[in-house]
Image (cartoon, rainbow, N blue to C red; front, side, top):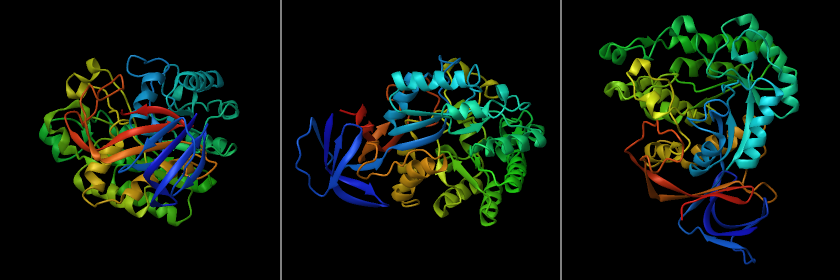
Length: 423
């Protein structure tokens, strides 16, 4: 299949340029200001922007075990709808992805049926119980890109140190969901004025910060690669910033909802605003934005966490934590941060495409000759109305339901194949 994309504003080497792009098979064959070549399909991208495909390094596809919420087919379709070309799947499925057979299942199913590339993150401990190191060596041989017990947090510091040392043998990044259970308790939302007003148990920010401090110290003592998932507090960011200055090999991500929403979104008891870590007060949200701008926060990840309607339509304290994000991430960020001039479009693209790929040593996804043809074409002048018909995910648990956001994904290419087209 040969495709010619003409007249697009293309993100190349950190800048936007008017260029044509010729895709031949799975690769970008040529880029120039004007190309005149024979192609099976010609796409006129006049007035549109062409980005490297988005890379989501933190997502839950729920397959195997919870496919009523999401599966690899529906999840990757939703990802492609959001302009995502690569997804890193967390291991908290049923059974947990803690062995080579489970890794192989996800990879084969994604290869056969997926609408985007799926990279597997293996469990750090067996069954993610935080008690015994998983089969990292064999999972690494089958292609996992990191290890994590995301959704769970290893509470025993000695076991965590052993996991870090063992993962270091295979140069596997450790991805941490930071939560001290003795401090988080039965917390439902951030511990503060809003939790008091609503009469809900508070989730103390220290629950995140204590674990981040512990794991930075463990990583520093070993020289291992540590990645902090869904960072959410100003103090957590300060800990990472100082660690980076000391040369610790630590990176971190932030979700769109922690960049854009505060705990006041919970005032209506909407369970689509319930997630872990919880939405924080404004000073924490602003700290996340500032840290994204200055590079302390390395990348953006959705933490796409589907739940069925019957699970979310419950009393707030009985509903599960988590929201979906594949299909709303870019348009929400563009609408609320880029259009008002708070964060540059270039920074969003870097943090949501190339930085995640670098962190987990995924293939280089820059738009250049010879690279894989993983591209996202966006109409920044378009709009996306987020209703249930818009959402391709099996689950609809997003805080953006009913919102109209600026920007619209028009095409997603994975290895030169159109996996989403808004025709």
